[in-house]
Amino acid sequence: MQVYNIIGECVLQRELKGGINEIDMSKLSNGIFMIRIIGENWEAKRKLIKE
Image (cartoon, rainbow, N blue to C red; front, side):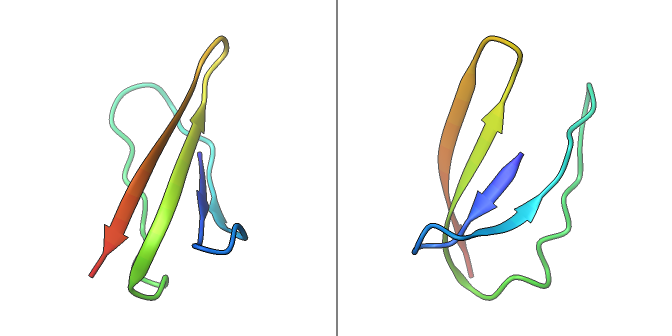
């Protein structure tokens, strides 16, 4: 899992395990981010707004 800021810099990267994962994003400033999750045969991207 990677989190990118609005200008495309990777600001957080973690390996996710099966099941529920908690990611501490408290050190990131407020703003718009893109989350990218890559699986074995798939990829998902989602927008995140941190307020």
